[in-house]
Image 1 (cartoon, rainbow, N blue to C red):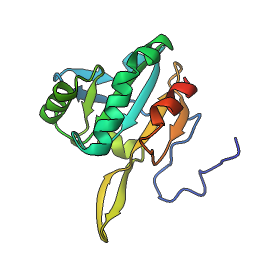
Image 2: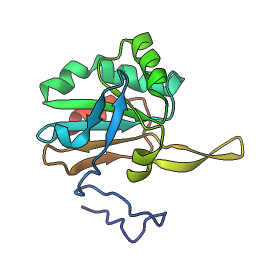
Image 3: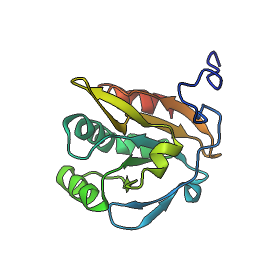
Length: 164
């Protein structure tokens, strides 16, 4: 508990912290069904936000969760991937890489904003808004147990598994 970030938050949005209740949501999955976080109460949820389907870093991250999915399940957890891409885009991405967990479409960007991961980014001097790769481990009680901000893809799956 070394960090108390409420007053030192970079934005005026209320920053989510470990121990806070995870904001509930209902998003369409890659099959067009609706996934509600509140319906998963009683399970540990690995909620990972990523910028874009079928891009190198996002593909590597998704495939590491795919390959380790059995270990995550053994620990009683579920994995949900979230990006602003469409249901159609998610469906193609999931099929192409044989992903074995739901991808949720936040095309209205309500959930990325609620979780504070929709941020200003810069590439080659150009500023734009996008998803900052972030993973939340949400406990069975619906509270955020661990936040992995600004995720580096290499080794991330192992960090998440160690937290479960």
